[in-house]
Each structure stands twice: as structure tokens, then as C-alpha cells.
Image 1 (cartoon, rainbow, N blue to C red):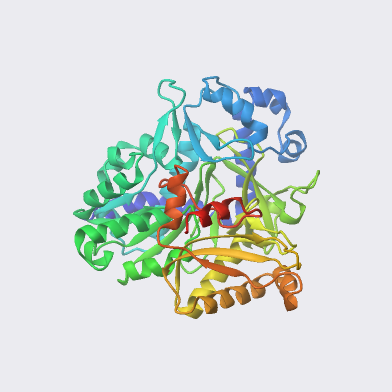
Image 2 (spheres, rainbow, N blue to C red):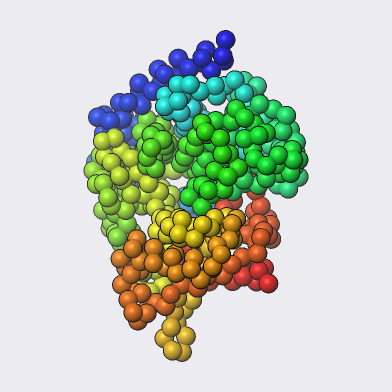
Length: 502
């Protein structure tokens, strides 16, 4: 009998609980907050802000201040050195390393045992729940799952304490039973050298019956290309004919979609987006026909949102999820079972539905170009590139963009460095299509482009093959969950990349 058929009823029961999101969002979220506050009451943070007297969201919202990494850094540093009961009960053993702040090269996000169970692993299980619901013919568990991960290292040499990529922490702590249906081996999955790991993953997976993929699209693409090199096949469908789904996240899938269609041309191949980050697991694509993600309401995460146009105000409006509106851009604020209290995660979202709560990720609060009042966000960039690709037959592998500031003649523009998987026949036509698409998508950009009075047409720089990988390698960030910054309001990053493009 099919193993998938045996396991499916367990996931079916969970699907009924997820259906409650539709009409019970406020009830569910208030319950999550009560549990989090109760758990944090005896911590140093909880005592500092009187958690013992907080019984409602309304009291919580006026008692506990908004925070970011800088606000919690002192407590997190003490936690990394072994102190307990600071932001969450007990000692925290794992810390997910992610891109840094203005004053630090890296951030170290606490990952508690509680958050592993009630957020990160629950999100992975729910991805399977929703996938099986929409694909009753699935044989997902009758083969292996190819799961990519990063690496970790000892945390200040404290016993059993680790710091590294979230994916590595998840692999290190995963239920041993999962190892029976996954590849590669744990030792391979946790290698630090990505190029060595890429080769070993490909060799180990080549002869397996792989039915699913999980990972960041850019790094998975690199592994799949190595699989093709070793196998001598022209498509991945020839290597793994029973491969049926790619659970992807970390970066937008839009620039990679056409490349994956070429590698996996067989019918019955599915794609499911996940919104998981070092700070938590927040959303899942619950409908294959929609790009929106379902906000997962009953994990160890309580959500609040700041209207994007108020971000940076001294006293911005902060809304619980049951008060948000569809169609508006918000900065996300989270309270989690890792001890992140009213924490600005740095992501921006736009709700497409409020019954149930569905959203799209529109960018980062610090990943945008607004040098001239154009307010270009990552969502505009991704959609604009997709239109330009359709118009010219191109396929984009990686990109970044930044402003070129005014010269003596008052001229300024955006500069895009794009690495193509398939180059357009006419790069000028691609640049023109991208520029026009951005004007259609962003009225502020369109206004600044009017008759070239403020902004001139964007400049396109075609990157050599492998440029962005070389830049990541030069910073010790090749592989794992590291990503190329898409938009920046300064030229620091783009100048580094251009210097390697010679």
C-alpha cells in the first residue's frame, strides 16, 4: 500500500483546523497572545513590562513598546553567552544568523525549543497538509524529499549551543523519522562549503526516487544544474520522473519560474510558496491558482501591522490582524515564542483578502529605491521584470538595482544589473519594456519619469554569468539562506557588484 495513503488522514484532520481561520481569526490570535504573554511573565522582559497585569491585546499594545533588533540586542547577546529567562523562559540554545544591521555584520535571532515545535516545524507540516488537500492523487511520501540546508557552528563554545542558518538548525533538530524520507544525508546537508556540498547533494540524490524539493529557488537551481551535469540528461524530469512539487521560499519565485519550467517540463509538476524566515513561519500558498499566501494564525506568532506610509513616525498606527484592510501595504510586527516582542521584522505585505487573511509579500522596509520620491518596492521590480521577460523572451537569474544620483546637468536614473539565464535578443528592448512596466505598476515612478524631467530611463547592465555568486562568495555568503539584495537606496552594494563585472 502507498505510504502516502497511510499518512494522509493525519494531515486531513489538521486541514479542518486551518479552515477555522476564515471566521475565527480574532479569537485565534487573541488566544495566541494570551499564551505568549503568560509564558513570558516570569522572564526579565516580562517583569520589566508588567506582563502579569496584561490580560488583553489593548493593554499589551499600550504597555509593550515596538522593538527591532537593536532594541533587543543586549538581551540576545546575554542569551548567546548562556543567560536564561531573559526574553523567553529557560536557556536558548540555537540562534539563526541572518543579514546584519547598520552597526553589526549579522543578526542572531533566538530559536527556542518552543518556536521549533509551534512555528517552524508546524509550518513545514502544514505545507504538506495544504498540498495533499489540493492534490489527492499525490504519492509524495512514496519517494524522497530533497531538502537543502545551510550550515551551523558552535555558539561561543557553549555546550550544545549552535549558531547558523535557520535551515541548518531545523535539520539538526528534525525528528529522526523524517530522515527516512529525505535526502541528502545529514552530514552532507550541513557542510559549510557550498560548492562541495552542491556536488555531494547531487551525487547522493541522483539515484534516489525524489518526489519533492524544498529550498531557496536560487540554490536549488544550482543543485539541479549539477544533477544534470552528472546524469547527462537534458531535463530534471528525465532524472526524477515522479518529482511532483517544489516547496520554495526565501526569495521571490518570479525570476526563476521560466527556468524551472524548462528544467521540469512534465505535466503534474507543482509549486508551493512558503513564507518562512529566521524569525518564524508566517504564510503558505493554500490555493495553487492564487499567488497570495494564507496567514497562519494559530502558531506561536501574534501579528500586528503598521501602515507603510506611517512607518518611521514617532507614534505610528499599529493594527492587530483583525483590523487590517485589503489593498494596503503594511510593515509586519511580530510577537513570537522565541521571545521577539512587538518586533519589526522588516518585511512589507499587502492583504488581498481578509476572510480569510491572505497576503502577498511586497518587499522589505529597507529594500526599496526612494532617492527621488519614486518609492519603488520589490513587488514592483519583480512584476516589472516578469513583464519584460514575457515581452522579450528573456529569463532573469539574478538582479539588483540602485539609483544613479544627479549629475551636473540634473540627470538621474536607476541602474539595474541583471544576470540572465536566457538573454534577450535586444537588451535595449528589455530595458524599455522594464521601464514602461514600472511606470504602469508605480504611479510615483511614472510621475518622476514624465518627459524625463526628474528621472531618465533606467540603465541596464548585463552581468556576466556567475557574477552574483562571485559577489556572495567574496562576502562568505555563498549558499544557505543568503540572498542578493534586490533594491537599495544607496550605491554601496551595486558598486561592489559592478567592480566584479569587469
